[in-house]
Image 1 (tube, rainbow, N blue to C red):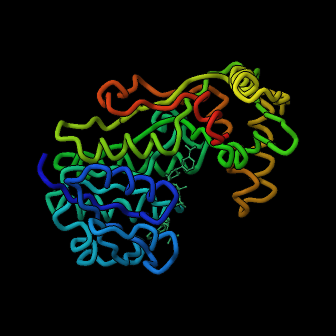
Image 2 (cartoon, helix red, strand yellow; image 1 turned 45 degrees about the horizontal axis):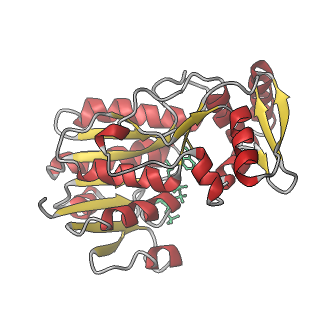
Length: 303
Ligand SMILES: NC(=O)c1ccc[n+]([C@@H]2O[C@H](COP(=O)([O-])OP(=O)(O)OC[C@H]3O[C@@H](n4cnc5c(N)ncnc54)[C@H](OP(=O)(O)O)[C@@H]3O)[C@@H](O)[C@H]2O)c1
C-alpha cells in the first residue's frame, strides 16, 4: 500500500485520539492532527514521529488556511463537535477545501445511529448532521466521497450515563418504551478502527457506512450484564414512548438554552423509538476487525 496522509480534525477529542491511534497501527500512514490548542494535554498525547500536530480552528480558519490544512491528504476525518456553525458550516468549508485540494474522501462527524432514518425535529444534533450530508453531497459529492460512519451507540458507561440510562452506583438500568426495541452497540475503539479502515480504503467507500459490534434490547443487555459480571442490574421503566416525546417537549419549552436538560432525551428517542436502526453493516468488508460484542465490552469494564 502506498504511503497515505490522513488529516484528522478534532484530533484531541475522545474519538479523534482513538482514530489517530488506529491509523498509526498501519506503518505506512502519516497523520496531520488538527487541534485548536496543541498545548492541551490531550493534544500532546498524540505526539509521534508520524504525526504532524497543527493548530487549527475550524470555525475561524480562512479558506487559504483550510487549503493548507488539507493539502496532500488522501482522506479527511472529522470528529468535530459543536452546533450548526461547526457541524454544518465548518464541515462544509472543509469539504470544499477537500474538493479544491483533490482529496479523495471526507469522513464527517456522524458516529451515530442511522441519521438518515430519523424524522426532522427529533434530535437537533442529528438534524445538523443530515443537513451537512445533504449539502455536502450537492456541493462536493461529484468529486469527493463524503462518508458518514454510523455505528449505533457506544457501548460505554459514560455514554449510558449521559443518556440518563445507567446509574452504576445504584445498579439501575433505565429505559423508555417496552424495553424490547433492538439497539445497535459498538465500542469507541472499534468505531475508531472501522473509521481508520474507511479512511485508508483504496476501494470506493459508500456514503452510509454502517458498522456494528452487537444488537440487543435493554432487557437482553441487563441479562448479559448479570451473566458476565454476576451482578444484577435492576431495570426501571421511565415511561412509554409517548411519554418520552412529551417529556422532551416539556423540557425544551422550560429550558430552551440548557441542552443538557433535553438533548439526552432527544438521543433516547433515537435509541428507543426504533426508527434509526442501522442498515446492512460493512463489517465483513474489514475482516481484520473483529468487533467486540456487548458481553466483551462489559467483561473489560467499558460498562
Ligand atoms: N453514538 C454515540 O454513542 C456517541 C457518543 C459520543 C459521541 N459521539 C459522536 O462522536 C463524535 C466525536 O465525539 P467526541 O466525544 O470524541 O467529542 P469531543 O471529545 O468533544 O471532541 C470533539 C473535538 O472537536 C474539537 N472542536 C470543536 N470545535 C472546534 C473548532 N472550532 N476547531 C477545531 N476543533 C474543534 C474539539 O477541540 P478542543 O479539544 O479544542 O475542544 C474536540 O477535540 C461526534 O460526532 C459525537 O456526536 C457519538
